[in-house]
Every structure is written in C-alpha cells, then in structure tokens.
Image (cartoon, rainbow, N blue to C red; front, top):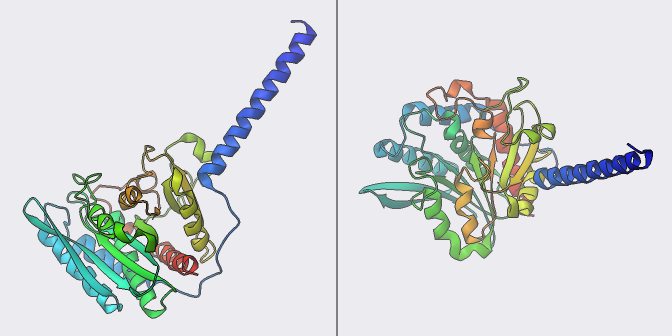
Amino acid sequence: MPPKMSRQLLVLFARVVLVLTILLVGGCYLVAQPSTRKNEPSDKRADQERLRKHIVALSETYHPRSWTHPENLNRCADYIATEMKGAGATVEMQDYTVGGETFRNVIGRFGAEKDKTIIIGAHYDSCGDTPGADDNASGVAGLLELARLIGKDKPDCGVELVAYTLEEPPFFGGQQMGSAIHAAGVASRKDRIIGVIILEMIGYFSDEPGSQAYPLPILKAHYPDKGDFITVVSKWNQGAWISEVKAGMKGATDLPVYSFRGPASLQGVDFSDHRNYWPHGIPAAMVTNTAFYRNRHYHTPDDTADRLDYDRMGKTVVGVYEAVRFLSR
C-alpha cells in the first residue's frame, strides 16, 4: 500500500474512532446524567426495626397477597391505613371493582392545604404466592417510614402517600392497575403536582463483585459492578425530574445514588407504577435497587424478609425524605 494511502486510512480510522468515542460519551452522559449537585447530610434516621416489622407483616402475616387473595389484600390495606393514621396522615380509601371484587388504594395526605404536592407511591400486592419481601413490601415499608418522618417534621409542600394495589400480573400495563386509577383521579390537578416518586424494590443490596447486572452490556463501563447503590429511573423525557430527585437524595446519606433514563421500551424502565402518570403529563420516576438486575430472588419463593438490608433500606428512605424537602423549597 502506498505511504500516502496508508496515512489517509489512518486519518480516517482516527476520525471514526473519535466520532464513536464522542457518541459513546455523549450517550452515556444523556443516560446517566452525571452531576455534582447534592443535598446536605441529613440528621434524620429511619427506624430499621419498624421497617422489618412492616415487611414481616406484609410478606408473612398477610401472605399471600396477590389478586387471587382479595381478603389478604384488604387486610394489608387496613394495616397500611392504620400505620398512616398513627403517623398523623389524613387517610382515604380509593375503592374500585375488578371482576366483582373490591380492591383499594390507600392514600395518606400531609399538608393537603398546600398549593403544591409531591406524590410518593408503592404497590403492596405481590406476584402470585411469592412472599414479595423486596417486591414490594420493601417499598411499602419505606412509604410507612416516610409517613413517620413526615408526621414529625413536615416539608414545605403537601405530600400524598399512596399504597397501590394490582400492580403485578395479570394487571400490569392495564387500566386496572391501582396506580392507573389514582393517576386518572389526580390528572385534573396536575398543575399542583410537583412530581411523583415510586418506591419499587428498595431492600436488596449486595457488596459481591458482579452482583449488579444491566439491560445493556455497555452500561457496565459506567455503573458499579456491585449492587451497593440506589437508582432513580425513568424514560427519556423525564430527565429534569430524575435530576431533581437524584440531587435531593444524593449526599443526604452515604448511600451512593445513581440515575438512569432510557426508552420506555428498554426492559425495566417502565416496570412500575410511575408509568401511569406519564400519559397525564405528570413527572414521575421510580427509586429502585434495579429489581431483577440485582435481586435474583425476584418473583420467587425466596424473596423473603431475612434477605434484605435494613440499614441501606433506611438510608434510601431518608434520601427520599430529604429529596421531598429539597424539591419543596
């Protein structure tokens, strides 16, 4: 090959590599939204024993809690309502009927007189006859611990805590999901809603190398190898809301906080109740340990209370609490 042609090919190759590198770095920036913004360290502490108590109640005392056991779901709803009331919330049951059975969302409100509101939700049903300790008794336990923290020290906005029913199959993705019912009910006041935070599996963590998986192999180069962090997740056009929630959580405790945004078609991005607020133009994201990308016991009989990390679950709760205060300023 003539020297001149060889130099031209090298220049072309270098340009291609440069363009691909720029696209890769830019793409990762758009997905991960790296930022130095963070909150001040919190002086709040979650009660780990309370978290454990709630998870044992949901995953053992009221087990199974799938749609085929409406009596247990109603017992769960009563338990959640009692705990919310004890924390000082004004509680409402949002009933609806599916197949001749009544199912209930539990809504606990703080500061309903405020002009602006943040909604925080978690589903309390489980998949089939699985215990569902992480999925999603952990989210509901977090919701109830948030109620306790908010009841003692209220933020500058209203907070609506919602425990949803019927998130799991066969209802997932349909209009009979509890969150779809709730989202439709609040759509008329969307201008007063700052945004929605969904707690979806916040109890399972691991320090083992290789314990964290991802939907795309390339993400391994930009996110941790260990499942020792919490993540704020939503779709592309929710980037601003993701950034605000992450900034409010980050720094509140020493728990690492990451974020991810991507197309809703990417497996896992829309796998929770936040999806039902998007059609109404309400910002919504989930706070999650990444579910089956980390917890291999997802939707199995081994998703039990003894496998959860109550220390880091508590830090997640404190992070969300401080994010609410951060967002309400």
